[in-house]
Length: 211
Length: 245
Ligand SMILES: [Zn+2]
Image (cartoon, rainbow over all chains, first blue to last red; front, side, top):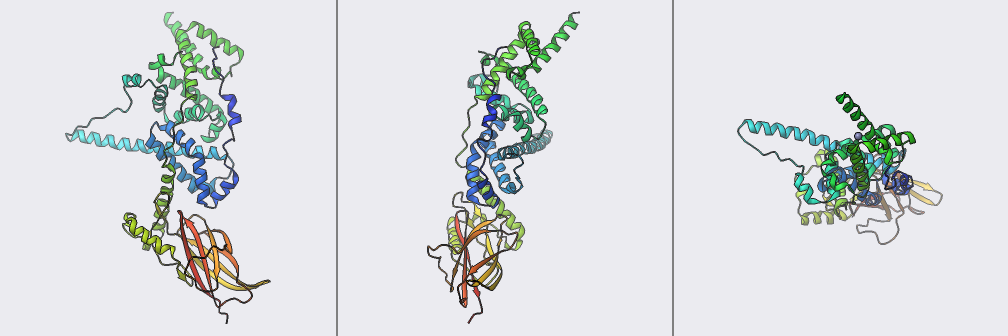
């Protein structure tokens, strides 16, 4: 089998726990200490923002999701009992914020489509723009990570979350199973499907991905 | 015959793809690994797919980290404060003041000055509804107040003890406070002495705090409670008459 690189799976266990929040800060957060929350937010803002950015591919949306998620953390810190690790709990919150937001956007998109149709019926015409870049735009960008980000954006939301958690955030199957609250076997099989789907999406640009 | 052959090849291709992830992660048993290798040797489509799959896996792990914007934390605190203001308004409709968010900086500053001054109370909530702004985000800060719920004078082993029952108002979040005691009404900020008590108060329950007031309690005791909300020093002073001669 061609294996030109090491599986990242091996490194994951050593990474686990490295970034855990110490219990003193957590305790102070539970008591409502704003300085402690400030420390907590500072510690996690970069990784949460990056996670949100990779889920959405959009800086504004990533900022919204991050601040929404931290607001939820602020409100719900007393419900964190330490059954899971703090990062697992935090990533679960961000994932839920993202999925909730997408649900809301779908409802909104639906109602604006209704508006569009009623506009057409009443004689107004509006151009519906397709947000996905044209193939020529994609080739012009020549940025692999941008191409990959565009492909990630086209995945269904649950697959997107899994791909970003595993491949970009470096979470293990076990951590993802805790974050998404599903069995490890389900995570593995869905991730495999997600990777194949991502590869399919990338297929038109495959020459950029072959050595 | 031809179509049957194609069907079986398609099935084999799909089975092969199911093994891609495990193969990249070295999780395939030897027989399955051989089976996949055989298929990839015969099937150019799957061989190309496997190479791009493997390459994609590698590229995903190299995606650059996107830097968080500098104003992110200020935004979070603004959201927290806005939420607190909204909650406070929904609790106490009589305290809703319209257009408060549109206050000019000068007006806000005036209110902060008023607020930083101590309020003299015998008991209860200072009837003041001002608007503070967070020092970092300039977001509104809820008008947190300390309420004196109870007070009684007791005799302890080392003299008289004034037990005050304090509770927060207008916030769901516990607040760390400092308490200073004066023998008489003192409307200025306490000098750099250390507090006689510090700790957290909440709005959920009354915290009883014993304050040592000396051998013979003075007639009038000023209890000065200060805390920091949104980076602003806030305070309440309670004047308590002990009834001593
Ligand atoms: Zn094949």
